[in-house]
Image (tube, rainbow, N blue to C red):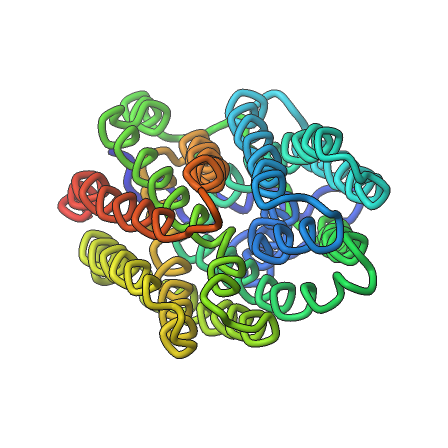
Amino acid sequence: MAEHIYNNQDINLKYTSGLFSAIKVHPDSTWARIILAFLTTAGIFYINIMPAVVNGLKGGGGFTSQQAGFVSSANLYGAAIGALAAVFLIKRIQWQRFAYALLVTLLVIDFACIYIAEPTTMIATRALHGLAGGLLVGIGFCIISRTFEADKTFGYLLLIQWGLGGLGIMYLPALTPEFGTAGLFFALMAFTAVSLFMLPFLPHYHVSKPLNENLNKTEVASAIKPSRLLLGLNLFAIFLFQAANMGLFAYMIELGTTDGLKIEFMSNALGMASWIALLGALLVIVIGTKFGRTIPILIATLITALCSWLLHFSNNDMVYLITNIIIGITWAFVLPYLFGICAELDKLGQAAAMGGFASKMGLASGPMVAALILQDENYQQIIDFAVIGLIACAAVAFLPARTLDKHK
């Protein structure tokens, strides 16, 4: 098992070289973590505003609930393929130039989607968007795994995603009646443009060689070939966690509407939940692995399952609000630890990119399964699907988390 096989000097990696050498931040600084968070989020920002996307496609684009769910799933399956491709490409590309090209591609596709009204065309176009976004996410995950205390960097990632996602969920649904789906895609374009502006400040992390060139052959082999069992279990845990949560989250507005809640209340409730969820990511940034990973993952995942089950009673507006707040906190808390396990198992970054693939597959499969089991706008089965997936996630994640805690 590859432990901390590098130090801060090892990861500097000539970060002052290049055309923008005078403005590049230190590889392990807070600013570097924030820029990496923006870069990695740019390809999948639509995930954090998924209820607004589904609602916007229905209200502004005239799509049915199932069609909107299939559009979201196509976007996410494309992202999963892109994240998987990044595992094999990361050592063969100049990642910063590739990131520039991908960000521009995302801008072009989002702009084109403003003028697409036919569901099949939208599904195919969003799949292409997902492919480009997934590649960008896979690159981001590889780089994050090479930062010191990667769990904290993943915490910043969730901090950015939930914070800005809360704004999107709070305000975008209200814009749909006036601007249609254009408001959604302009919001995505704005985030991508900001990420494109920040990219020149990011130092160049070499991804084609180990973090420490003085590692002996045994250490390098350990870094390149992590335990297949532990990695496989952790990837499956990420898949289950994301599928369960996103399958329910994608239909959160529709669930509340069926139970008689007003759109204004739900938008504010979900936006507030996303902002308060920042506490989960902040907690990871503060405590890191001080208390290990096993106990935090198990407790937070089971709490998520309990709160998901309580959504059976979401006709009560306070139940809807409080459960979404707690789910948001635990969601933003658990993910950095699961991704951190991937980073710990493989400091070269490929396992982290595989974690991105498992995450996207889960995020895509959740809404897809939910759309398939949805009948007559009855969302109770989707709640049960989420609860079962979360309990299974806790069981699967135990062994890899516990093993790393023993080796800490």
